[in-house]
Image (tube, rainbow, N blue to C red; front, top):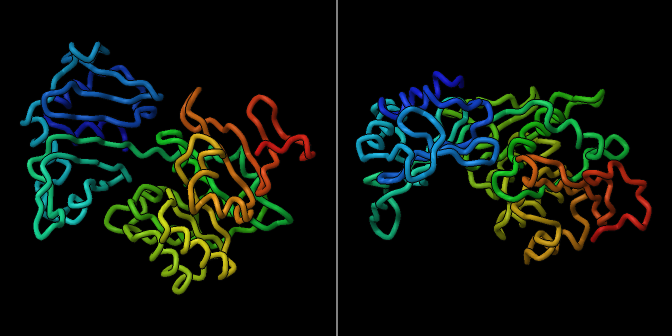
Length: 328
């Protein structure tokens, strides 16, 4: 979605501000609106608070958002038919064309102990989807052993590019990049972030051999794909629950390869997670990709094999694989 199309989602006042903002929208990751707070933008990992003229300013001098701004913006986002998005709003977000996610917060409407909606909405966070084709090029050579794709876990702190990297790895193994044959990939996109599906249609390029199950819980979706689509690789984002990990075990038993992501700042974080740590100790995953946001989102920090041997380290490059390179 181009800048012009993106800013049309916002109220007239906010739209005029965004038109004047001197930022590269291809690098903007979030635009946040909160009633009574300044308009906030996240670009290249840094926050900006534009004033009425679109100039970067301190927070206290930024353009403060009104209830009318929120209400008008939601009308545009929902194309004046928010009732059509009731199921998504109940989960706290909705996905729009282009794969962009609109997170919402406010007063939860509770019926029979369950969230039935959010009204009024007082906070909006537009997370802009970025497909960076080719971003997985540096890691792809490490993800194969004897022409077999390795069970791979991408480890990253929030907003450090793990979903962007996951998306490009899926595309490349599906299309058959690097002279290798393409693999059939089944993607469980529980929150519509990987494929960016809108009404079931993927908005991001996922590869010609990729099947996407959108909006389905990961644990259930993995087994559904195995039964129905016979994938060679099953890909999921942000594993963590006991159900997710049990489903991963089932995927392994079915002979499928695993490609997944998890939140973590280091391999030590991953090893300390009660259930996931057990998979690490059993060497279930054959490759670990560690991302960092210290320099910029999506910085490749290191690649390890299943036994902790460092295959790549930023600033060092490929490793010989000797015992002295074991890192954890």
